[in-house]
Length: 111
Image (cartoon, rainbow, N blue to C red):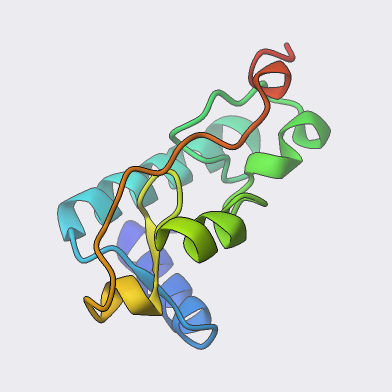
């Protein structure tokens, strides 16, 4: 799959849920390329902003869209890596802010 195909597929499915890509298209394409690289590497699209351990069960919380995306969008208007933003942030109704890591440290180093 090519980055452009992934972009179009995810854009359609996520916007139907009120979730948008970041307006920084360089960032979006870089993250999508990394997701595809991780898919080739691990067999699943692990979040490129976190360390995957090549064990689908241990990494299931960081398979994009990760389980942390919904609370991040709710609280901060964007997900941790910045790929996705909420409708409010997309429409400039709220300001962007730093999103802290929600993944427990023990999961990050569970190799």
